[in-house]
Amino acid sequence: MKLKKFVAVAAGLTMAMSLAACGGGGAGSTDTSSSADTSASSSGGSDSAGGLIGVAMPTQTSSRWIADGNAVKKGLEDLGYTVDLEYANDDIPTQQQQVDQMITKGAKALIIAAIDGTTLTGQLQTAADKGIPIISYDRLIRNSENVDFYVTFDNYKVGVQQATSLLVGLGILNKDGSKGSAKGPFNIELFAGSLDDNNAYFFFNGAMDTLKPYLDDGTLVVKSGQTDIKQVNILRWQQETAQKRMEDLLTSTYNDGSKVQGVLSPYDGLSRGIIQALMNAGYPKTISDGFPIVTGQDAEIESVKLIADDVQFSTIFKDTRLLANEAVKVAQAYLEGKTPEANDTKTYDNGKKVVPSYLLESVIIYKDNIQKELVDSGYWTADEVASGVAKG
Image 1 (tube, rainbow, N blue to C red):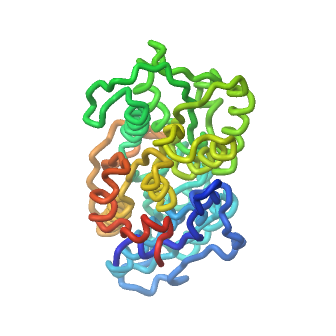
Image 2: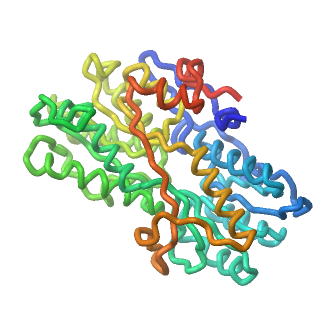
Image 3: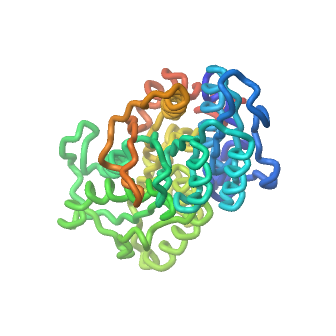
């Protein structure tokens, strides 16, 4: 079954004079379930031949995490394991309790995408004492020696790709990497992810290293002066927080008739909040008409539609089908007494140890390669791209 068939998202955004902010762990998410109702467990016990594996995901307010959770669950069940899949709705105590319960139920392995990578130390120690391997999923769990393996994408490269797409959108670079004809200066603003997510630093550092030469020579100007990750981060990757920050920037920095021409956004949910703020401020409706260049990440269907509609310029496609498959392979290796394959044993230091990792590759998505990269690969259908809504 195709991964996207697991994705359950609210109705897509309506594009006219405004956008309805939805999905992606941010504003407008309509998930009203309580933390007690977020379980997607297939069983409470370990009655299959393979035993029970706990899968802890951070939130159901992002179509991406729903897709990840269901893909991991299906992959494990296809191998004969029983799966306890839980979503914590971005509530740290809920995730702690869910992991505790997985251990109590007798989980043989844990796959965890942490809300805050520093808050599960106690749970991981309990798991280690019971010989339960811990696989950190996409977000590195920090400050614990009891993280056995990390599966993710090359997150520094993701940041490089985000910045590169911003430069392409502004005409400073061509898509083949050659120098473009645009000279600038261009007013841009920077956004970063949540500081409790280790990935946010990799994304931001990759982007800033790429943009630095153009900032240094004046081709790019951050008119607000806010260039430090501590100034530009968005807690919990919340869409509504990104929208509010963009609104504040427009009010405080662009009240003199100047315009923002580009925005580095590290995630599609933030991008939609930023776009909403720009739309509300009266910016043109499309890039062709002068709408600012806005980047993104995760190829969420709502943002893919915006790219197809010439509103958002780009996103980064991290094929979560591949990530889920890698997590399944690692879990199976541990439970069979084998050593999982790592392709990076130097980069990801969690503060207590360098965690062996498997890094996957990502792809920049522009309007002209949606068909090739997302539709032809079966990640989304043409109808889903046209509607901005994933079919169940």
